[in-house]
Structure formats: structure tokens, C-alpha cells
Length: 67
Image (cartoon, rainbow, N blue to C red; front, side, top):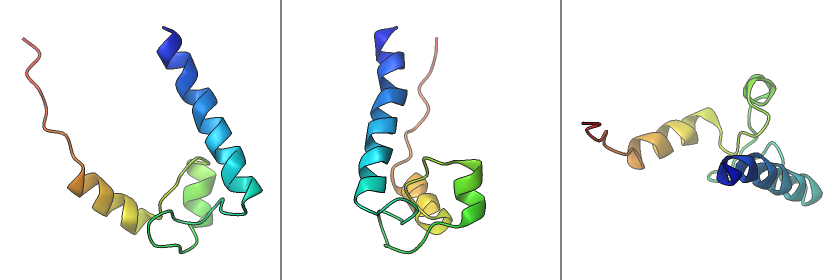
């Protein structure tokens, strides 16, 4: 249970650091601004929509059987 509680706290610390460095709202991959709509929907977004789509395609995890 502790692991689930640590993730939001870690994200908050990472976001504070990005704000401190004036990198909040800037894509970590391409360096372009992240759209206001995306940041409004997901304030912790680290990638613009284009880079996030590429990231999801290249880092996708194959589903595992549950039985």
C-alpha cells in the first residue's frame, strides 16, 4: 500500500522541480510547449501530445495473461 502513496508524492516533487527550473509546460522530449488544453486536463503531463503518442507506441508493454 505504501508504494501507491509514494507515487503521487514523487510526481508532486518532480513537478515542483520542473516549475523551479521553469520547465513546467515544456515537453521533455522535443522542448516545445505543451498545449494549455492538455495541461488543463492533465497538469502533470511531461510530453506534448505528439511525443506522448510516440512514447506510448515505442514503450508499449504487451498484455500478460491473467490466468
